[in-house]
Image (tube, rainbow, N blue to C red; front, side, top):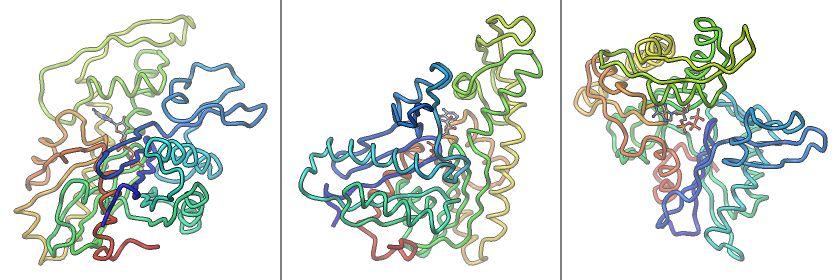
Length: 335
Ligand SMILES: Nc1ncnc2c1ncn2[C@@H]1O[C@H](COP(=O)(O)OP(=O)(O)OP(=O)(O)O)[C@@H](O)[C@H]1O
């Protein structure tokens, strides 16, 4: 049985979440580490480090150790994990007893990296460490009956990747993973604002634009937003107004890539499970699932019901934490 000595970690490209049964999500912070380039020391992790992005003296750089669903910097990833493990054990008061940990690693992590993450967490004071695949965790966290022989379709739109999977009887039947997610949308917004207005905006501003006035490819009442950046011609700060129609156009390419991955996965579905999908539909999870109009747009494109997970951004972490209680029935959990 799961008890509060067992925690789940969603090691995401954009955010790290730690879940503990009875307590819920105890940590939800950006996957960012600030490093002093002179001393090579880590000076801040998570929220504190993200606040430093683009605002620090040159010798302090804010780094995202995971990019596009893969570990870009292994040492910083383990430093970050160590920090969050320490914080979690402090919050939960596990001073003497070691917790069991289930961790959801990025889809693109190699077996060597997975093993390394396992070792790093063990070195941080875990008793046992289990790994779980992201779509399976997302499905469990969205309350889908993953251990029954029915098709559960999950579309997890994260920062670095989008994973589309059909899960049945505790295992992944078919899965497509693409390196398109929220980060790509932010990058496309930065490039388009630069090209169309000669204004340079930062990552955080691009993300705010996407969240506030970003829309999937559907009709809607126009939204407007004042945005500040640096004029590339004069070098001076400048404010411009952007609207949701132009942002919708910028997001189009990423959205069509996500749709393509969904279609490809549904096409791979064994015929016996196809009927389930018509009835039960598809669940959207991950922070990217919160894009305005996404559920309706996808419904119109794939002609099956599309639902938003009850906790899109937390589903993977919740599923990771809860998976220990059904660990024996999940074939895909590997020690
Ligand atoms: N309301 C919103 N509208 C659109 N996008 C959003 C919204 N809220 C968050 N996001 C985006 O969701 C992404 C982060 O999602 P999530 O936390 O699920 O990623 P992750 O699990 O860390 O990434 P990955 O699964 O690639 O490892 C970011 O790109 C963020 O900008």
